[in-house]
Amino acid sequence: MASSCIHLLKRTLRTPYLPSNPTIPATRFFSSASSTPIRATLFPGDGIGPEIAESVKKIFKAADVPIEWEEHYVGTEVDPRTRSFLTWESLESVRQNRVGLKGPMATPIGKGHRSLNLTLRKELNLYANVRPCYSLPGYKTRYDNVNLITIRENTEGEYSGLEHQVVRGVVESLKVITRQASLRVAEYAFHYAKVHGRERVSAIHKANIMQKTDGLFLKCCREVAEKYPEITYEEVVIDNCCMMLVKNPALFDVLVMPNLYGDIISDLCAGLVGGLGLTPSCNIGEGGIALAEAVHGSAPDIAGKNLANPTALLLSGVSMLRHLDLHDKADKIQNAILTTIAEGKYRTADLGGKAKTTEFTNAIIDHL
Amino acid sequence: MTKFCSERIAKYAFEYAYLNNRKTVTAVHKANIMKLADGLFLESCRQVATKYPSIKYNEIIVDNCCMQLVSKPEQFNVMVTPNLYGNLVANTAAGIAGGTGVMPGGNVGADHAVFEQGASAGNVGNEKLLEQKKANPVALLLSSAMMLRHLQFPSFADRLETAVKRVISDGKYMTKDLGGASTTQEVVDAVIATLH
Image (tube, rainbow over all chains, first blue to last red; front, side):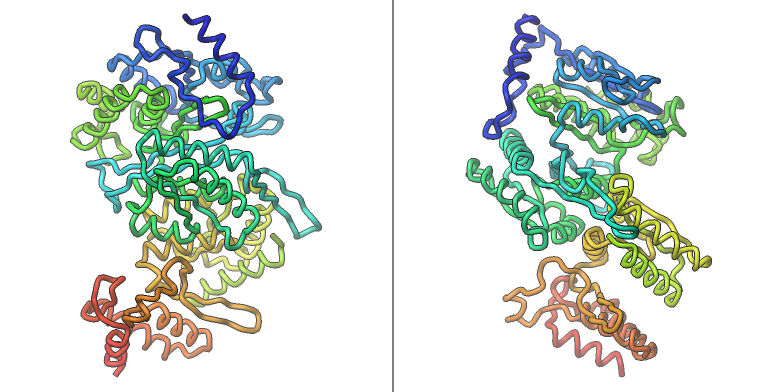
């Protein structure tokens, strides 16, 4: 069974990705019956990473999730094959398993190597960053009715890294938008909306000023929208979007954006629900690879003290389960997390409570 | 992104902070990714900051900035940004402060200055509002106060601003976007009444 799975996987990876095909659902290649465990790569990361990864493993085990973790760590030397501290084996592991969970990684300062996040993104061709943002019941912020998903194009746009100095004191930065990348992310956005029962997809842009770049992005979104007539499609200018988000976030459902706006808006939405310590995130790569990650920092000051909040990594793990179509397990764990936070008895320090990481973890297991 | 323009805006920001008794200037950037472009902007800001030792200067990355704005906006005082981020940050801040109807703004040039409603988003020309005469005049009134200050009539500017603020805090005459039901004329009459 396992060998025929690998055979199928290898065949898919050789097939060129056609923009008209939505992301291949993972269940075609993984047995959804709990008999064969699914292998997933786990990067615990640095700082508080290992502690929160422990929490995730404990909770997933208690919930009988059929996942077998393959752990990889950031190396201490630069691997010449990847030009970074991540080894070729770690990347191959993600490519083979096709799902992964990543904790916070601090890129060591210095030259001669690529940043860890950049390495992952380029090597695994992670083109979409998906962040579900919803208000956590029981954790009060100024906004109670947030329930939206931000989908950000992650490979080009303003972050293409193409800058040059024209003369001293004048610098030019290139914003590159391609039809292929825009279609790819739009396809994923609509597919996601359909699979998760969302009703509206909003494309965020500034095409009134950047007529060609954002104009191309919008054209691609419109093309894809026509194939999904049951989903409402709208276009919102970025400044209007910011204003609407801070006044009434319930107006939005699924947001799809190019790189820069996506960066800003996804962090803004994280702020609406309580910050990066609570926000899950999932990166989608070519061929249906999904790497869920916790987007907060490695917090070296509280590392090893059993104080860290594992919620972000846990909810990212839940996103990963949903990608694998293990919806009932995902719901079970998510409900346990939300109930524990809502109850208020066991909350970590960043949420205003006094519980330790292990106490919080145990409380969630009790709620399963 | 040019050094000339970055310096110019940084100088304006610090001068504004100095003249209006503002304690902190924050530069908003994304220099970790756009190293050359935003790096140049930051360099210019830092250079100008050295000339104003009494004003605190700090820098914040734009995505962190938006996140902080929605959770703790009180930490910001004066913010100086390049073009695109400025658009987003201004509209986010306007939304937090109450919307397009209340935020004043101005465009300042070397020889001229034009003052208008601050936030550029959304309902700038709504037909229905026009018919019902229920548009909110507060933004434009506060922008005129800014214009008076620019023309160096601070006492008139203060009087106008105080009157407008008192009308809003009284709460009796407010347009729909602030939760009331008055028309534009009623709000203006209330301001005039307060001025006397």
